[in-house]
Length: 230
Image 1 (cartoon, one colour):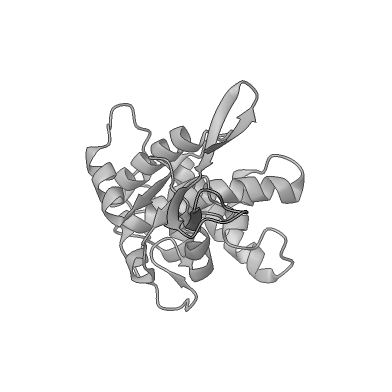
Image 2 (image 1 turned 30 degrees about the vertical axis):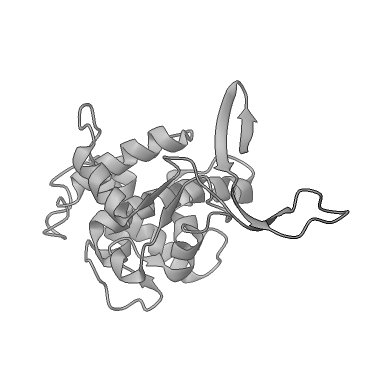
């Protein structure tokens, strides 16, 4: 059985239920067939999740024709390796823009500015003990993004370990998928379409914060985004 959400004139497949494991039991008045469900597992439709190997394979085979890339050479004075991940960003922004169909779509420069503000393009920043990798994904976020019945169940990842987040090829698509979720949550919190800065603040867990750190975090992202747009 497939659960389908109707949005306008479009059908969006959410999840697919289930693989039943049947157990044979003695027949009775209540059970004339002698069959009962021993356990039940959710079977997801193809294209609604990715594991580690599938992420790598999809990136290698992805059609690069017409891709929008983030601006290059704009952050090199501050970060020598800032252009190393432009292709990763371009591929995964395009993939999720098509996969999740959210308006407005995310743009590559937003992702690049976010990475600059989160980690300075370092694979494993040491100062933060609760977030990991180039995109600073937390343990809780990683858990949510792998939960087939959780808030991001429309598209999840499988068998991604905490140490995998130190690999940009894994961390970048995970972060972009999470930004799509943050676009939804920011809209719900604000009661209107969020700006790109508000989406980033929700990614950082600071959208409703009144701390000074909120201004500091936004200032850094805003500066990098402006540099990319010059």
